[in-house]
Image (cartoon, rainbow, N blue to C red; front, top):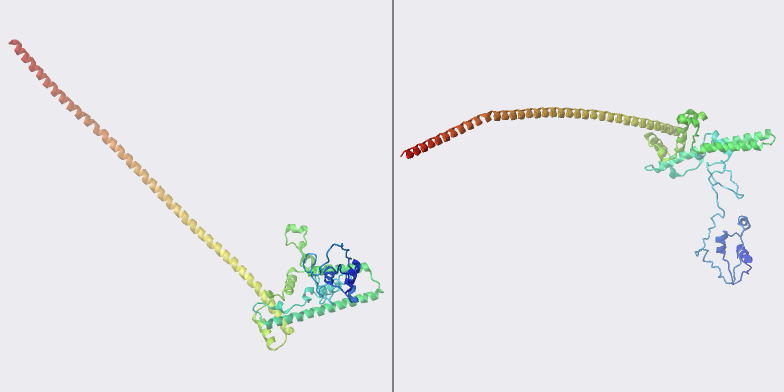
Length: 410
């Protein structure tokens, strides 16, 4: 029986052989963490809370079930019994000082290092703390990259990393020696306020070196974002192009997009592979020059492509203007032709109207000329009938009167 089981049963007021309640060791482990029997681990065990005495009518606790009716989760021996924060902490819950001596063994922290002396050494040697971290071989592998070339790249990076680490450690040793000499000159008495100020300043500078560049907002941004007074680089007295390019080159050395596939670098790598050796300092310098040349060529190519694109756009604009002028001329010609056709049609319509009006007038004149002859002929015809009728009646009347006279005489 473990110490935790004895302690739990003693708190409940029951003997180890009591049939009423049996507290299983697995249940105690699930509630209070791993049990420790050795004196070395007892100090890290959290204090236990006593069990409350159960009523007589309550059932015994089943060791196969937990509070939710599921089997309890038994932590493994490799799991830590205390939670780890974002920063590495020791047994006294204090932040561990990560320096150049232990940064490869302690859990990682933000900025890789948090020791003021180590950060000052990195600043003196112009080395980013992130460049001191080890990388695996898979970081140098890419699509279509042979394994030998990836291995050579890894070897070159590791060699450079060790060189940087050696330079930074040497600078740190110099700083440590200077501090010891200053302590000896001061008689071993140091002002704690000065030490705190130096530590805070070193951490602030390290944070600026490890983080991305921040452009502070000022009133000079009212006149434009390119003002020198609002630029971080101009305030620090350095050129933005050189610093940003070198930092970008350092950050992207191990990434696939920065790997060159030129013929010169391939020849250097192939020579090193055939001779079964790592690249020499001269070859590394040649690789750097090749990389810089390729970068310049890429920038020049980008500029040429941009100029070509602008030239093509200008040509397209010129062609569009020319086509627009041609279309406008065609439209103007069509408008002129339509206007001429409309004017000719109007003239023809006016002429036809005049012709019809002339015909109408001629017809009216002809009708007016033909109407008097017809009236005169009808009048003559009527006069002849009247005369004929009157002469015949006269004769008849005259004959009747003669006959009446003859009869009367008789």
